[in-house]
Amino acid sequence: MKLLAVDIPMASGPDQRLFLIGDEEEYRIGGGLISELRDPVVKALAAAKEFEARDQKEDEEDAARELQETERKHQEEVEKLEKVASQ
Image (cartoon, rainbow, N blue to C red; front, side, top):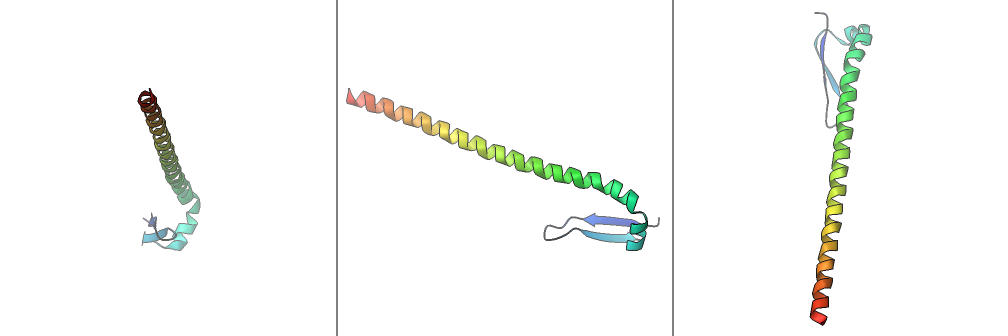
């Protein structure tokens, strides 16, 4: 095995690459294959983050709609009680 490297996503900065066997020169030599293998994973991770963000936005919108519906129903009940009280 000429090269064994692991890309480690970091929360506090750019990803780090750890060379277990080989070095950066070996990585550059095989760059075409490495990027072909890495790019789908990176794209999938980006898509997963995008879907998560969309889901969160939809959840927030659903909660806002539910709150509005609850407030509308409450207002209707108050109006009914006021009508009954004024009769």
